[in-house]
Amino acid sequence: MASSSVTDLKEQILARDIRGLARAATLIEARGVAGRELISALFRFTGKAMFVGITGPPGAGKSTLVSGLVKLLRADGQTVGVLAVDPSSPYSRGAILGDRIRMQDHHDDPNVFIRSMATRGHMGGLAVSTLEMALLLDAAGFDVVLIETVGVGQDEVEIARVADVTVVVLVPGVGDDVQALKAGMMEVADVFAINKADLPGADRLEQDIRAMQSLAVFSEKSRTVPICQVTASEGRGLNDLLKLIQSADVERGSHARRTEAWLFRLREMLRDYFLELVPEIELRRHAALVAKGSEDPYTALRALVSTRHA
Image (cartoon, rainbow, N blue to C red):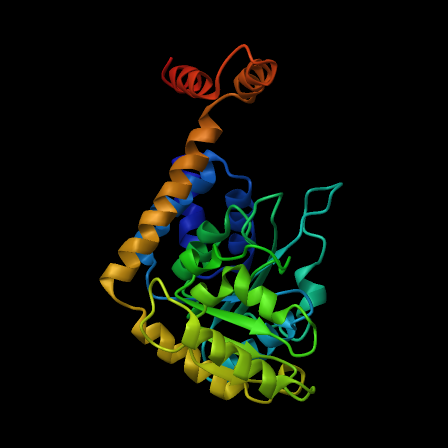
């Protein structure tokens, strides 16, 4: 894309033009030069939005909770971007679930932008371009960006490196809620939301979380993570949850935290950037050599680096 086209698209983003946003989102997900140039041009306009990650096991009601939070934020006059990360279709590699299906209550609101993103096999519950997409919505002037992870019930701790505040959503009576806590979510949670709190076992689940907090050694937390019981389908408890999210955002706003987050992000971006610059045919050739035992993996890496600089 020519620099003049990037400039034009940049102006559309800053004006929060919906068509321009959709076009920019497509460029970013394509992982090409044009998308990187656009984010570079927009980056100085970022840093104002609050990124909120919503994660948790399948069936926890994350989408319903996100929809409820959007409604509250809009009632307060705030603009909202939503990134709903879906599992990739094994056939098309695109998102299986559509944003219009998931949050029909908000799709006609010009102050709400919803985008479904496919993981495309990326681990950690996020799509590869999640950070860039969040920065795009930040530059467009959205006050809050809600990022809902894929919900595969495995390692979704990557969301904590993108979000300013991470909400772990659990539901009583599923049977794997404590297992979800053991999978790394205990460490990344800034707020616990016990959804479907009208079901039996909600109080017991809260007790279990508090018990695990008292025993756990937190790598970055010296405080007890707050717990909020909600019933998202009825809107109950969501006001209290939103207050906890906003409070956690204030506490996490230190320069040291932002530096650590960007240290992780830049490492990830460096890895992805390098992989994009190495021809796939060279990767496959060295993979075949390592598989046959005729080359060790470190020799392969050195050769690939040499290919990059050739």
